[in-house]
Image (cartoon, rainbow, N blue to C red; front, side, top):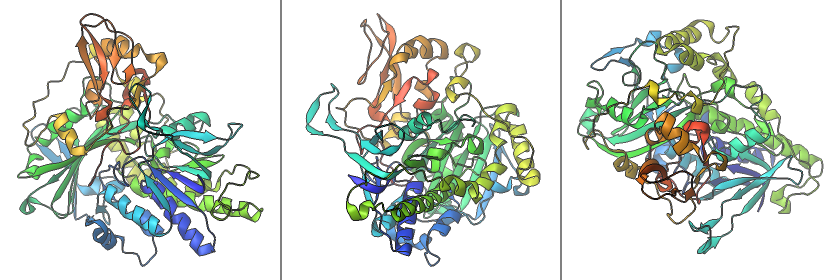
Length: 589
């Protein structure tokens, strides 16, 4: 199936690119075939974000007369609630101190921003793109990047075969994956996208850049009584439960937003470069909700949704080269999140629009050279050489996104080097005084997996049991994510062959099996097995023996957060896509 432009991922970056391409086609009287493939069962099903939304990029993308707030509400009854109050608290175990807004970094202020469901915004954008003529195919998981004969240029992707059983044999429902070919393939998979990571490696796109570092975001949505609701309240916290001293280096904090009509969006973000293997991000989040200054926000309410997703925290210094022959990286596939602002949707939308403009110009120039668009010929011209839309890199370098990220380029590293209080002070200095003009840039080296320290240096953490009302056990909450995978398929979470000894030989024996705690979906567990051989769910592994513990991978629980591919000791898990349509089915995230 040939296209002029293929977009992998139906999030804010991919959909914005599709919309901008159609706008340019209409403006210039040209026709390009544009396709978006999305591994979720529908647009928005795999989208999770806080989200306090900066509308700048969206308002640049849409026509001047577009009223996206009203249109969003009319389309799916999802409110964009204007921020009315901004609060930042430092929590102690029993109390809190409010930091005056005047002392906060300017990028943390939310005047003119809106509390939204990013998943519902994507559904709205997807509908708008389809109305403009974009082909959108949810339930199609891109499993492989396709290259030209020389392996030097991207020519599309292949979707995963479906209907294969756990035994690796085709079932009666077997269908071969589809090869989708395009003159330009734009990858907008989100943070730690599997195709995007393979491209970064193949083309060495991060050469001369810092290593990417990540955070894990865990979120719940609650419905509360309207009399307890404070529409427009935005609250962030540092301190308890993640930091107990000024120089603690566990990076992270919490958020709590009141969205109309009666929703509370609450969550925690934990930097995955934390050292303590006993730390359990999910249980830290549950413990935070019991704080005396936090608990009242949930009184009389019901938790209606749960989910998790990793986010990029490396910022400006970790941005890879954006283009390569035949395609480009968009949004969080590249890593445009502003960690100080705690926002990445606006930068993702902007990157999609800028990429679209560069790709349109490149394809238009090719047409001027006699190459016929796929929209007109129905096929890709075999004489066309691979195009690299380098103006995309130039456009982002000249954009307000670059300015915004460059200003705070050292802030995350300040927290990592010195701890929470010095990191906060440095961030304030940058945002209030230097505005990014300091003559130094701090780089970050090393993987988050390697930041985990040996268990012998720490003490197991005693977390309180869930009460089933305010706090929940993990598997109960997991049901609220709508996660589903066909059990009879090969596991998409695979132990790398060359690291088959790591789970029992390193992770469990040296680090006390941290994957049992950092996974927010209960995918990984070590169980006693009297058999001498070791098995996992759809995945072979070495080790075992009488009364020895062995790793079991419950791949059907996976919410596609990608945390395991980042934080596993030695990064021993290869995260591949399951059958299209599998995974969470978020409705209001």
